[in-house]
Image (spheres, rainbow, N blue to C red):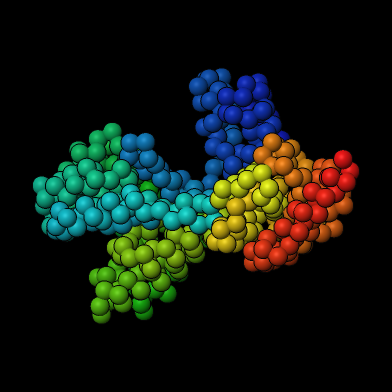
Length: 481
C-alpha cells in the first residue's frame, strides 16, 4: 500500500512521554510533530534506543514512519551522505527528502596528478546559492586495470587528498576486497553485484558492513531476483542500478527509474524499495564526438535523472558549466514545497554604516532578501538591513496574508539594538508594504518612510531622497525639543 502520513498523536502515544528534552525539543509532542514532518530522525529519541523497555514502541513507530525507499548511508570519518529514504513518487504529494549525492569518478589508469586534481575539486567545490552552500558529495574510484594493487594505489591517493565518502567500483571481488581492507571501519558503497559475482560481493558486504549496489542493465526482473536473494542472505543496505543508457536508450532508462519509484511508493513492492543509482558517466563511453559533446549529454542525462528519482549520480565531467546547473536544479527539486525558503530574521550590516546611515526593512523570503541586499551591496550603500519575519513569503503576499505585520517589524527592531547604533529614528519600509506605515510608527515610535517598490530603485532613493528625509527628521526633532 502507498505510504500514508501519520498523525503526531499516533506517534506521541508510543513515545516515552517523559519530556526529557534529550532530542532537543521542548516535549515529546513537539518531537512527534517534527518526526511526521520529516524534520527530525527517530534516533534522536535516545530513550527509545537505549532503554529496552521501549523496544516494542520503537518497532511500532518505525513501522509507521519508515520510508518506502530505504535510507542507505555511506560514511567516511565524520562525513556521511544519505542516499534514498524517500516517501513519495511526486514531490507535490509531500516533499523529497534527501538530495541525490553527486559522485565524481577517478580511475586507476589516470595519472597521479589527474587523480589528485579531481578529488581536490570534489572537496573544494562550493557554490553559494540563495544563502545555501551547494557541494559535491562523493568520489567514485573505478577499476579500469582490474589489478587489485594498482587499484589500491589509486585509492590511496584519493584517501590522502579527499575527505569525501567513496564508492568502490569494480565487478572483480578481489579488487573490491583490496579497497575495503584500506577502508576498514568506514562505510563505502560497493559497486556492484551482478548475476555473475553476487555471491562473492554479498560476502564482502556482510563482512565489512557496507552498502551493496546491484547492477542489472536493462533487466529489472533479474535485479529483483538478486535483490530477493541478497535480502535473504542478510544484506539489507542495497542500491539498484537498472542501467543508464544515453541517447536512444534513455527512454528505457527513464521508464526503469520511474517504475521502480512507483512500485516502491505506490505499489508497496519491497524489492523495488531501494535507492536507485544513475550513471550519466556512461555518456563518456557511448556518445561519439568531442569532450564537450560528451559532457553535454552527461549533463542533460543527469538533470533528467535528478527530476526522475535518481538517488545517487556518478559523473565524470568537472566543468563548471556542467556541474553548477545540476547542483542548483537538485537544490530546487529537493526544497520542501510546504515551506518557503527563508533566511533568519535579524539585522544585517552592509558596508560600513555610521550613525546617520539609512535603515531598510525587508522580509525574510530568501529571494527577496538576496535581491534587496544584492542591490544595496552593488551600489556600495553603507546601510543597515532589518530583516523581519515574513514567514518566508514575498513582501506583497506577506502583507496581504498578514505574515508581515507592524508587530513583526517592531520585534525585529527590538532585537537589533539599532537605537544604540544610529542617531536617527527612521525606518525605510518597502513600497509594497506602504499600508503598514502608520501602524508601524504607532508600535515602534519611529518615523516610517515608504521606500521604493522595487529594490533596483534603492540607489536612486538614497541619492535623491535620503538626505532630505534625514534633514527633515532633524528639523522635526529640533522643533519638538
